[in-house]
Image (cartoon, rainbow, N blue to C red; front, side):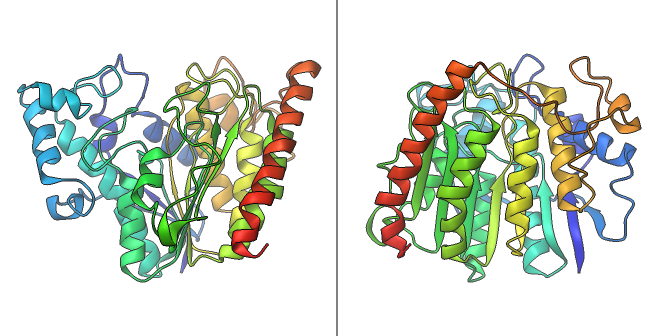
Length: 376
């Protein structure tokens, strides 16, 4: 068994969302360039698999046939009130050339990742082009047209696997939560900026699941200004014990980089160091891991963050390496010319104090209301 598999294809670099769209689909290819330039694909434990386009039958495991037809219709220029009601042709889900083909390939990459794990080929599979967690069965939203995360999890559960989904993208994972809201074989945990201040306006602590799924939908809505130490405290005290107790067969993680400080579409104050530390803690649980990309609207910082995540996946990350490196110099990033890890970032003391109070309250609420459901 290999240790880490990267799923990517040149077609994902050649096509993609319109240039004016904040969701830059070339971030994944840029991350791959950084990974290769730093020799992070050269070890015996790493390998690459080309993405394979998801078939219509695979897409219809979650999405309705009418909705898939609507995507093809708008791609051909046939816009109607019905397609607009499905979220197609809006500012955050624009129409572009070959959109059905591109999205199906990006979705297929996550299904490929699931299959690499199920076949026992790898312990970790990473599709940086994935992470479309806002898509619903018949509705696009938040730059997401088809939900690769749901389809990858369905591939895993279809093989009898119990799945833990951890989403550390800054936006609530509403589409994935919806798909598994009444199931206990999939636990969804979303750490995101509160819906009080950020799209999609959901993901509050009272969204716990229905029926047999009650207690298996867990949300940590975080306050504006949440910084590394506060974020990691919430993870260690409220999230990690639940993951360990659930004891999944496979962990799926969405590695959106839009929680990074100064992301233009969000309001947290994280560095990629905390993402690397959380990923390390998840890997230490010694479960097969399927990782996707997600949000991240500073393209260079996002690509660098995903390259760092890959270095963690293949055991090459040095948490103490904050000096100038050849890899960092190759990034041509005007914000930071160091290695893959960010500088430390500190917000003002008053903000940190407010954040700390809210995070402690949130942790107490999770431990009081959710832990007993799982005998913790």
